[in-house]
Length: 318
Image 1 (cartoon, rainbow, N blue to C red):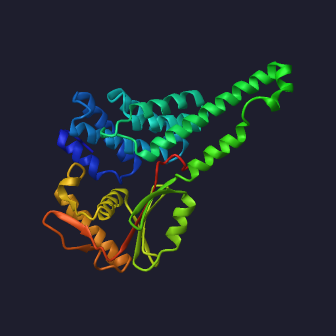
Image 2: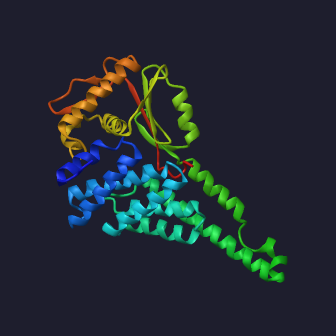
Image 3: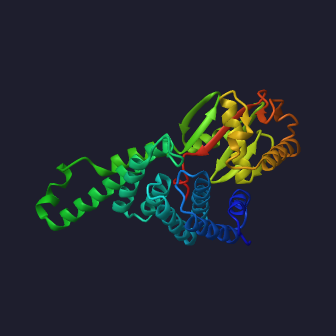
């Protein structure tokens, strides 16, 4: 893949997300080269696109196993060199340290992600991720306190005798934090409302769909579209496009071409719409997924009940 011009790079980023990791790595190198040669502000739309690709690339690498986590970590650090306050990169790095039990570093990065988050910022954390950042940070502090207290016990016979009388028991506190995390694993849109739920609850809904129900379910970054009788696995880019349509459906608004132009060209938008109609017709036996709408807009058929379930973050996925 020979990327020479800036626009070629931007076009490649949005069309190559479903390539093999080795091909994506070439795009990543081109993206880093582009940022090095184009010292633009992080508020620049093109820079945003490149950083967003790098965030997604790193997240994909993180899911491919222990060896690829090192690639993910390095990519997040490279993003921070360009955008030092990027809260998502800090949040992802925090969790990598968290899984290694580097509690002190993880806690620091969780706190920095929380501090740097600005709702108006392009790379802001969602409300549910903010809550998880605080909960994980609290859990890190508990582990650090537990380790320090254990060291103190080992070095002091008097403290050992008083162990049962000192402080709040750690294990029940950790269990309560874990319960809160599990109850917030998924974002669920159903019956005109948005709520947080557990992965188990989301899976139960997926397995028990009603008549005219359509669910887009993200199962560990495998997007599945199902009507309860049949299902189809969607590529991530197609799933993201359908996700935008469903969110607009919940607002009772059409999805305009302008709303997604920063991600897709107009030809790409039409292609994705045709692909969704084809999947719905051939795999789910739905011939009317879309309903007529104004020019340069798209609207899902309101006769169906659309359910959307996706993780608040990838952090609970092993």
